[in-house]
Image (cartoon, rainbow, N blue to C red; front, side, top):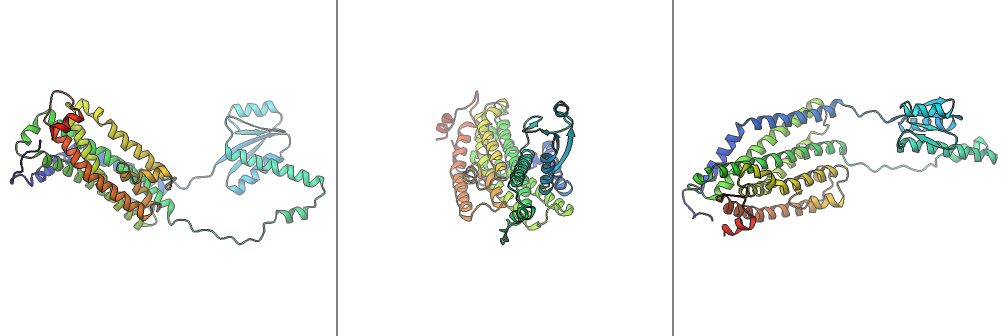
Length: 395
């Protein structure tokens, strides 16, 4: 139960925050996690800058008998940016042997195409289009259609072509969003674990009993969340700044302002998401009796973060999907999903506003509820505390 209000402990949470900040800052795990984030970001940015766009697909296509279909597929592939290397075989056994040893991907026979395994859709489409063109030519020959008439039939109509302008810098924004999701997931997960670990360590060692003799439980919880949260925020800013500078130096990002705006979104949503997750994991840590029980207690919360991460990765391909849209509004998944949709320009203003209202409102409800569970469980020892027991104990 919360202790009576003392006039001397109103700012005690600052002392707790300062202590947790400096203790975690000096830990080797903080340095390792910072270096790991920088290494991962460096790989992603350098791959974008120097990896190139990559060559188009290429295939080895064999044939037995007439070369018309195979060579027609190769010609169509050239127009589509697909390399098709054509090889001739004297008979079917020779062609099948080439398939088995991997020399070719498929072989065109008189009335069928044989593939080594599953026929690639691109290669299959080229062969089918070529075979269809051969049949059309045969039909036109049978009806005596002249070459001039065929050319006239194949001439495209003089229609005016108007291309809708694509979203500006869509590719660059998608890459920025991908990096943002990875950073947010790592920060929310890693620093949430730190909050829970600090709570269970103090409980198991009974240090919390000494602390609570001088400070109220809510002050202790608030200080721990603020201290570790500020450390995580600082690391996030450092890593994001490093990523932007590296991208600008290497030329990986053509629009610096978009990257800066994305970094600001990541930082803002980290603050909102961390307030919710840190409160929940702190309460979960208080429910456990020993550090060994912590992983089991945190499983539901970790699953929510993991599912939100995968949904957000999917948002890179389909930011307007129903599942992604719903996830960007729900309070537990919006810190990961909404920044992606905002960076890609897929989130209308009203959805962003609703998402902010929902997560702020949820924070107002969840943080006091988590604090009540923390208060009811932090001093109970001897075994894992049930949620109902902790809730009633803090009444």
